[in-house]
Amino acid sequence: MGRELLDQLAHTEATEDDRKRATAAVNKAGSAQVRHMDTTDIRDLLYSNFDHPRWDDVATRCLACTNCTLVCPTCFCTTVEDASDLTGDHAERWRRLDSCFTLDFSYIHGGNVRSSHKARYRQWMTHKGRPRSWV
Image 1 (tube, helix red, strand yellow):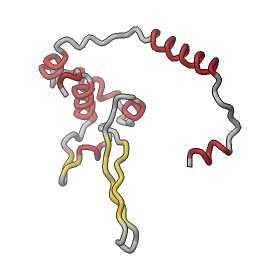
Image 2: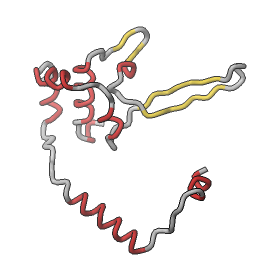
Image 3: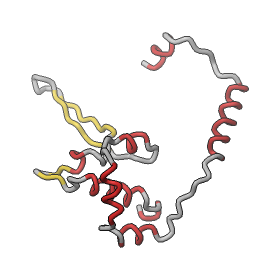
Image 4: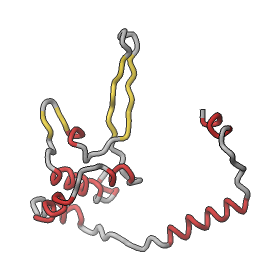
């Protein structure tokens, strides 16, 4: 399918010079990333400030549109959807990208465990901000 699509587009093979320029551009962009988040004791900091007013402050500005989680290269929340044909003879299960910022993401048997923007933002931050050693 991908080959069929490419055959319809005007394109050329990348030259060695193209690859070198691409590698240089990626390296330049990477070296421009100089901001650093100090995660020393971040688990204790986040958990000891579970009811801090900052969560409310951010939540009042958050639209819960999911854009931040859908473009984040380290977000990995998914959902599962089942579909069947009209006869019921064929069923499929699909896993697809989802966002923990949607209201339905934490819906469990008749209720939502994170019904506010504040709760979803706080869950995302405490989950995202943790070092890999917590996993």
